[in-house]
Image (cartoon, rainbow, N blue to C red; front, side, top):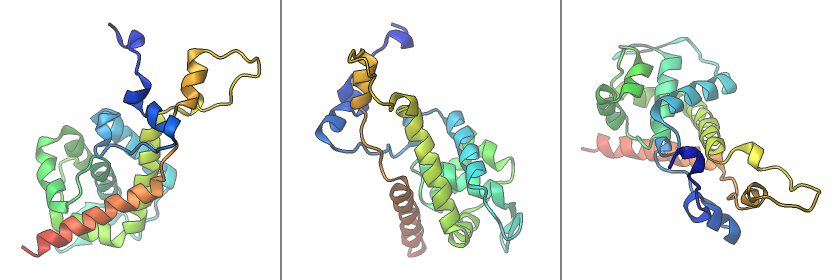
Length: 191
């Protein structure tokens, strides 16, 4: 059966939750809904949409000099994938094509990631919220969330629209993921 004929039943796409008024959680790893390369593209789009303002284009630390947009892209994408700890992200880069692509041969260590997140926490959180919304919209496209036709005739598609789950609070989800990153780094620093 090809993808065009493969029907997603309401209980598998969150429709049953919508009928009961429950929200559907974002997956821990956004690549469950979109592929890795699509997530990188969406991350770049989200950052472009936020239009970040950096104090300097280069983020200078005692550990090295890195491009601030690259670090923002890396953290935003990693948090969307459920990678929270800075050490976890650093260790994931060599084995992950998407993260390696973002770093473009200039792999930061965990200290740089932690320091960047501290300095640009609200920016990372805002970019992550926009990214999570883009991922959500790819799973539940906005064009499916239009009003019912005035004709009184409903197709399967129009009924599916009403089975869409309520939109989550993307800022709250992003804040939760950034807090988890802070917690993971705090726990590792106590070792």
